[in-house]
Image 1 (cartoon, one colour):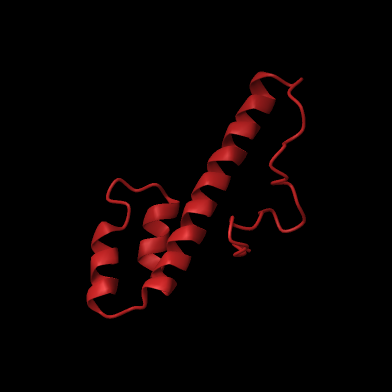
Image 2 (tube, rainbow, N blue to C red):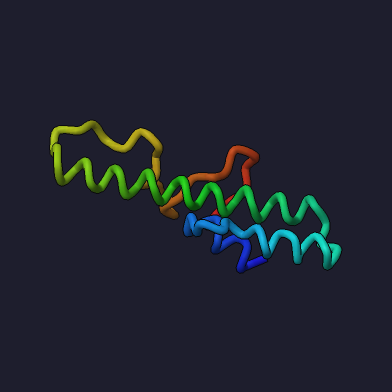
Length: 86
């Protein structure tokens, strides 16, 4: 599950397809796989937003504060279903 999550979160070209198949073949419940996929996608998307924001600050200092709230205490926001990535 860690390999699947890291592949998705890092935006690896294979995106965890091999790991997904292995987990399904091993009988890992679909709801557990879905949770891992959701959190990994959230981390990937949030990391991209933070990178874009940091680049925008360097290129255009007058940009408004980060609307995603990514600067929150733990540094992340919950996934749409409320899963924490912290």
